[in-house]
Length: 224
Image (cartoon, rainbow, N blue to C red; front, side, top):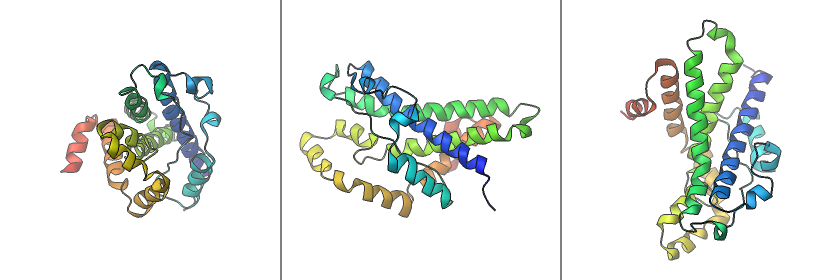
């Protein structure tokens, strides 16, 4: 059954919005901690053009949509920041790294809350495209949240993990960097490590939206 073109457009716009939120959150947190580098480079914005990466924002998402991959994800250009400018050079990079995934979590919760309110609308079925937009926001932000927490360079999870590693271990871990893209593709597309946790988050979000079940209770039920 062919996918309607408006559904593909909605998916892609949701991805662009979510990637822009993610990168702008990094820029805002870096600026808050004292480093204006990203702001001066025009990255403290929701304009997706400023964050676009040809592979992660254009080629990969279009390939995923064209091949009917079960979920859509991608990445944007990493937001540059100078740790030496941060007020706390030790903890500051951790907060900057976490800002992106936290922003995706907030978008996810906001979409669940909006879907919950819409579920009481008498013309709920007539709001198909708006409902689809919220569902894709939930799904895409769940993917971005999980993907960016993978502890491989240059993802956010790697920068968080660095905080807890001894300096010597950090240097050893950084040697993985040149192979990260291949490892990520193997983990995500071959081993499909995101499939189960993403399904749990999405099912929990739907339970929260339509039945008012707290997300943590839904996750516990899915674990069981």
